[in-house]
Length: 119
Image (tube, rainbow, N blue to C red):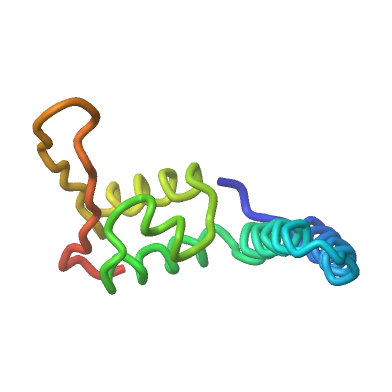
């Protein structure tokens, strides 16, 4: 994941502010909610460097967020970012991936746990 340039982060912040102004002026509660959701996604995606995102994901795993869905819900980061970050953290031996065996159809669940290794 490439580091964001300050120019790109600034443009994203300006775009988020513009969309927030549109959301504030909307009289429809559904539209307002969806626009603010987009604003928050932009702010979270462009407001963190790659290292900051890794640190945030690791912190969330250490306090108990243990599935990809937990991490998405807790951080607001896109699913692909979560997978990329957890792969790097696993390679660095900071977390372990545990697959849960599930009887029946479907894929087994995955849990991330923090290891005793320090960054």
